[in-house]
Length: 482
Image (cartoon, rainbow, N blue to C red; front, top):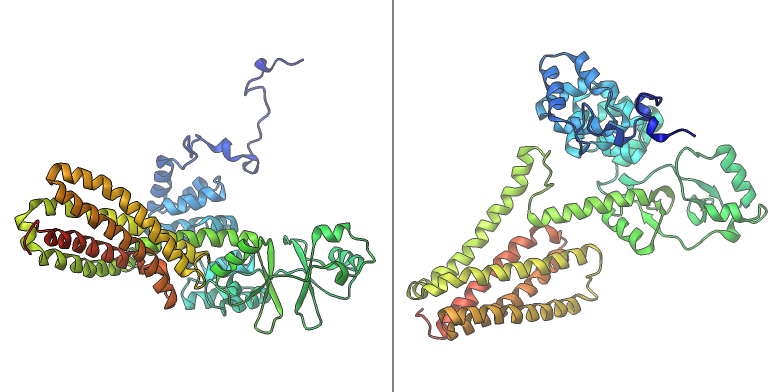
């Protein structure tokens, strides 16, 4: 028996081939730190080689990296140096590297590479991935790259680009396993072995009629466990979910979620089978849409640190200007009660509390409403039930917070002031709850994305009503003159 303690690194055979290196083996080497991030001094070495114009040194430094690390390196490199880096490592810009790149960085890289190099990458990708690679490029760049593609890929990409962005037509895979309905299970198995495109993953076989309309599906486990002489029409699942080619990607994701789909056929306007959507595409869509809605609520556009400064500025400043306009409304209400505030300093002390709590309550309700609209949980059929529910929640929250702030204000400024701010708090939180659900619903009803501008208007309503309720009640109670 060999004593394990007698074995050390010197006695063990070592295979240094890069393909055999596991991700954990790269941790804390000369390029990676203990958290498997590229070390600053390694990045600096690449940057110095770029500045010196030494492409050979750049290539030697980058060549040992895993594709995901090359993508990280590109993103960590200064924007003006990325084109130089791409030019120095052109043949290392593989499909795997491109797939790992941030969208904004990938677009810049594709513009920096020659058209034939981008075409070579696109030809190795699935059609939906190739389209994603090209869709954000300038029209001239797109045409130059498409011209370099092989005829089959070229036709598929041009067909996909003809559909609107973020629709099933752009995202679907055109590699579909489809067979005529007259086959038996045995015929199907023989066909798959002889003619099937088995290089691409598929979860079910689509059965089509003579007009190329999908009439059913056969799951792979059914095919493998059914006798060969059984006709497909006898075992296929006729109840299937069909995705229109123009359906928005968010609606597609909701259908997959609702019906627990693994894959689904995509059909054109005439009902012909033209592609399929699979669950791996949907996972990406759900992640993208969730992040997009969260960022839209904040009014920051893409919210990406790699987004060009001009685009980031344009996306953010318009909502700041809109917010400035709505803030004027709240300021006007405060100015109207200026004399009361001058006579009673306690009003100025307590006003921010009313506005702040109301704003938070409105934001809570708005976040719930926007998500419910996005997931089809809030529709025309149940709008008023949801409004009623949120109003009751808001009233309960308002009473709870009102008791706490009323007691505190009563001790510090007198019980009359405590009663005024408590009542104002209930009113403001109730209004905030209504605004938080009604504003997103209103935007959705007029065909606008409720995540885009809801926060600006909800903030205006909660601030304005908070100041109006508190200062108005204080004047009405005789605590200060108007």
